[in-house]
Image (cartoon, rainbow, N blue to C red):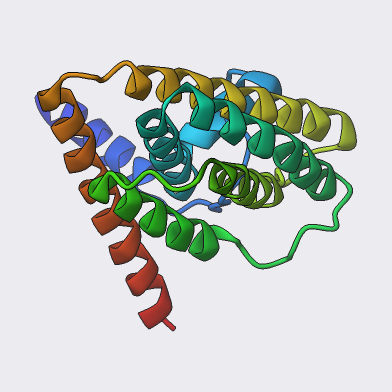
Length: 201
């Protein structure tokens, strides 16, 4: 009996290790396209890094910087998602561009340099457009794909709102130091992944 259970366990483990088709932006099973879209910006590392570091940068700049970041981010995100939905987004992934933008944003967080307020329009628009264009769902019919893109838009904006608000509230010295440390980790992570992708044929 014990040997039979061991054989069943080994067979189940072998089945679990079988390779499956991998998609970078495939829908999440079991939670629906809309809710999967809400979680999508946090499940793709390049997207999550770009959102988090942009939120840190905006939060360091204060409420005025946050508002300008939102104004640049939201229209560009909607435009990118619409282009992705109608199939006019680039065929190749835009994750290298997102990683490069994340690394530069993280350096600004580490330096605690507050750029002129108009720069936040451009930073938000750049991240929003790239994130939207790179969020085209794969293997979905038009209806579910639209639900996924709608969820991605709402999720990306909501996560940016939340993270920027939290970083703006970090006003104690140790909290600011913690943001700089997180920014340095984000910069290092984005740079490493970008370099590995560039070096890998």
